[in-house]
Image (cartoon, rainbow, N blue to C red; front, top):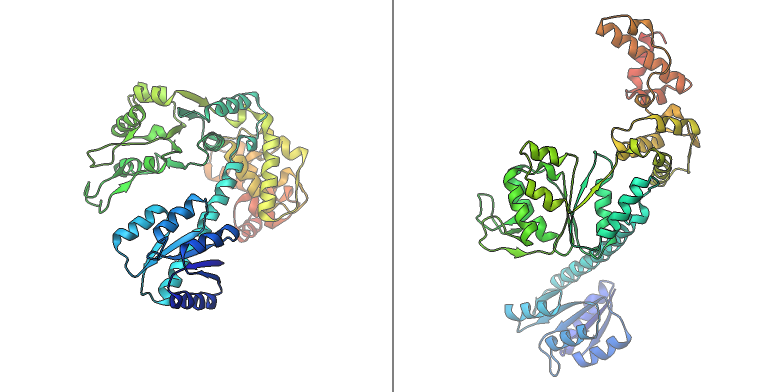
Length: 449
C-alpha cells in the first residue's frame, strides 16, 4: 500500500514516515499541497494524509483540486486547529475521515486500517455487482420453450422503463430470476436490487420495513430508520408474495405507486423515491379480489406489465437442457468431474410432473451429484418418489384393508427395489430411501432381505 503524506511541518512528516514504514507501507512525503499535486500527476497512491492548515493552498483547496482532476485515492485530513465544522466541510468535499492533532500512533494506524478495510469492501462490492449483472442477465436464463422465449422478450423490453411489473406463476418457476434479469439488464442495473418477501415479515412490522419510521413512532422506535423503498431509491424493489400483503398496507402501497412518494411511520412529510416496482405472487389475484382479500385498484396499478411464468410440466422441452445446466453447475461447485445424464435418467425426468418446478429439478440434480460416483448419471440414483415402486405391487398391499400391514409390505418392497437399483449397495440404498445406514441394516435383517 502506498501513502502520500502532506504536511508543512518537517517533524510531522518525519514522524508519520517512520511510523507508517514500520507498518509496511510505502511512504512519500510532501511539504505542501502544490508539490503534492505535481507528484500525483505521475504517481498513484492508495491513501493520502493531508494537513488542513498549510501556507499557500490549504487542505480544503487541495481536496477541491484533487477531485477536480478525477483522482481516486482515499483521503484522511489532519489538523491541530480542527473543529467539527472543518471536519464536516472536509467530509462534504469527499474526505474519508478526519483526525485531530496531536494523535497517538495507534489512533492513526487504526484509522488507516479502517479505510483500508472499506476500500476492500468497495472493491468486493464492485466485483460482486459485476458478477450479479453477468449471472442474472437474460443471456444466462435457459429457455427453449416458445412461451418462455416470448416472456423473456417482453421482460427485455420492460427493463429500461420505470414501470410496474406483476410476475405470476407457481412456486419454483423462476419468478425471482425474471425479476432480477429485468433489473440487471436495464438502466437501473448499477442501482440497488432490494428483495422483500411480503409473506415472511409479520404484518405489524411490515409497514416499518417497507416505508421506515421516525424516532418515537412506536415503543421500539429508538431511532429514525429508512425503509426498503428508501434503500431501493434509484433501483428496483421486488415485492415477492405481494398477495400476502394485509389490506391496510395495500392502501399505503397504492399511494406510493400513484404518487412516487414514501412516508415513514410517524412522519408528517413524504419523500420522493425513484423506484421500479416488480411484484410477484403464486396467488390468483383476480380470485383474491372476488374474495375481497386484495384491492382491485392496487391490482391494476401492479398489473401494468403482466408476466405469467408457465410451470415446468408445460415446458418439458427445457427439462434436459436445464438438467444438464444444473449438472455442470454443481459439478463445478462440488469439484467433481463433469457427468452426463443417461437416456434412461432423462426419460424419468421427462415423465415426472415436477410439482416444485425448476427449483425441485435443481434440488434433485444437486442431490444426485452428491450421491453418484459413476461418470454417467443413471435412473437408479434418482429419488424413488420420481419413479414409483415399479412393477406390480405385492398382494399384501393390494388385497389388505389393514393400513399397518400395507405400510409394512410397502416399506419392504421399497427397500427391495432400492437394493435392486443400487446393485446391493446399502449405503446408496439408504440415501435413496432417505433413512440412516444403520436403520437400513436393521430393516434388512427384520424383513430377511
